[in-house]
Image (cartoon, rainbow, N blue to C red; front, side):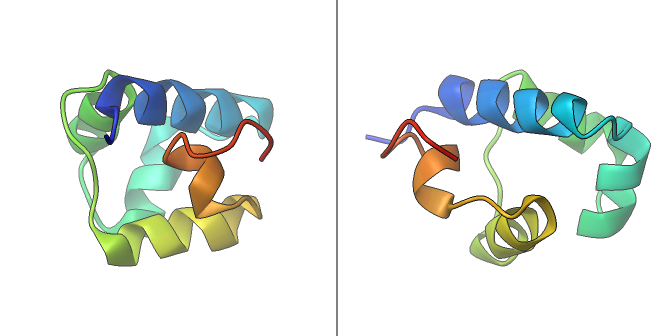
Length: 72
């Protein structure tokens, strides 16, 4: 089952490792900073289209963000 909290934690970790502010990620995904915060806090998920953008942008697998494997 999809765990929004784990997704959010992993997204935040990757974003912070890259030194990217929430505002830059929000612009890339075409959402508000509040939506990024909600994703990172496990309140919401994202669309498939945005998941693909995240994976390409950070060069990580969707399996990692979705909690299906532990290595990015």
